[in-house]
Length: 406
Image (cartoon, rainbow, N blue to C red):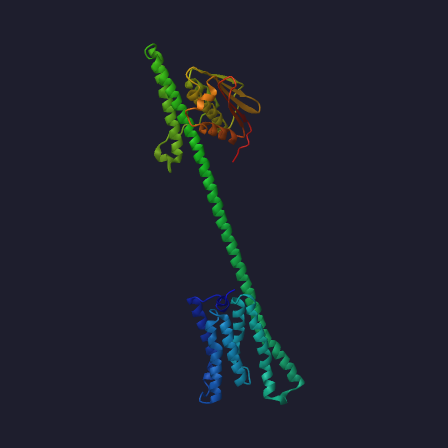
């Protein structure tokens, strides 16, 4: 601890200076005025008046520097002990100084006021014996001992009160600091949770946009190429292809409006048509709309599942068929098999395309990664691999009572 912290521990604000100045003035009027009303032309009276002033005025510094106040009061008290054979009224300053030192001086340095007070409590009453040895008697001796204890009590009692106040203030500061630390930690945790939630939301939106855009564009491209090839031979087939392209485009636009509407500050102002999310029954339409080279086999009855589970199953089929359209080739076929069991939903998408060669021109991983994240979030398992005899396999198992991941 630095010396400045010991000499000037609390410091003093303007308000503190005003209060301490008012205290010194008030106490000075009560204790110094009787000495000021005496004949100050007499040397003894003038010295008593000066000793009284020297005893009181240091109270102005009691909060700015309690140890300096104690030192000045100790010197003034010694001066009074020399010039006065009786206790002076200005001794009322001593309890205030003892409290001030105990309250604001940190560490063991505060005990100095007890040591000085104990010495003063002994030599003050002993002054009577030195002035008039003839008054020594058993009765006067008992009075002297009682006076010692009273004087010592005027130091120890305010000192104990001051230390208790100091400890309570320190405990309050510790509690406040701990509460502030907990608050800052809570803010940091909330900020981290908000960032994680934002990251999860961005990932979810990215998956949704990828599934919608990739699948819709793949279907539109396949239908457009097929319609162009058959335009001269079968005009009605071209018309059907254009109809499918238009329906797919409208559906994709509706889905994108639904997702983008969530990102707006006020979705109501955007007048977004929030269509319901795809369900299990919509998978059949998805397969039919994708291509005539894809067939669907449904085993069992679709159970009642949460919307998140149904959307996951729909997106798995959608992404698997998107990859089929992009990579399997124009002559390949795909088989979608959905098995609704008692405990889980199994989705198998198998194609007979070139398999390992399908990733040669595109950046791999985004669609499969998003598919895996969706299945994992439902507590399920996903298998994606090239088939030994050619083609690609996507198998997802979704438990009907999933353990949702964070």
